[in-house]
Length: 257
Image (cartoon, rainbow, N blue to C red; front, side, top):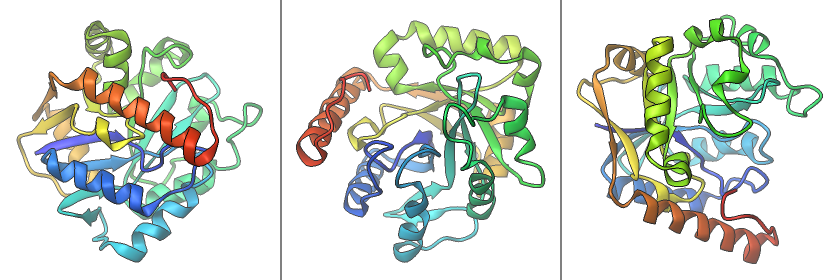
């Protein structure tokens, strides 16, 4: 079962949710044999609050995930904290949205939560937490209190970092995982669907809920796969994203954004 834990429905966090664009991503996911994908759009994105109403209008939700074109899409959100890192949070739609509403007033540099405050906002909610791109500049794992790393369910190894920094970043993340006894999990970190399938987790045991997925991760019942085409697919996605942002929305950006 192929699983991606780091996926963005929106082309950019300053561009609203587009159902047609999401539909193309779902089709790409199916073509790549994906079993499940966690939606992790940025909590400070202009279109975040429109995502779940749009999905609810079009797709069945069974209390754990949306079924779209045969692929499971689990709710989630990506949050920035004051120390700099980005954190991936997932769970049921109700728990994810409850958490989002607790943190949405903390989206500017002046109001960002600290990591302990981030965890405090999850009181009473059943959520999985993954530390996103832990060695990306300004987002590094080393910026937070080491004693808090044990509270995470995984460290993110994503396609964009492998493309940009080379496979040596995999060794960095895996060594950090060993040091903190924290599993490493893969996500595409894609904003454009061409990147989907370039890296994924192959799970060997079934799961239905995020809580069960969290258990499978802790059991180590999976393996990370990096496709030989990763660099080509990520670069294609980056160029497509840059072109669409410029021609459709008038937004100029770097190839590395």
